[in-house]
Length: 77
Image (cartoon, rainbow, N blue to C red; front, side, top):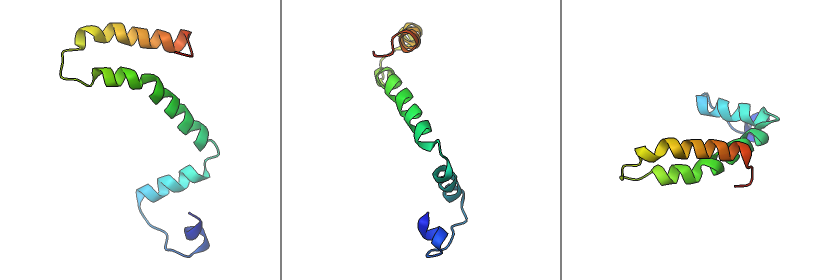
């Protein structure tokens, strides 16, 4: 980003560069990514458990309710 701003390299005219440029200018970018990381850590075990060829659908409703209630009621699980 600094090289483009200083004029050392040409400004790429594509969507991904504009997304990165907007993210670098966002003051809350670090907070937003930490929130996403927190959510990912909360559901990682749940997602890993259901990535299988075994029939897991009968357990999905109960595990979803448990995951939701645990994340609401108990913060440190």
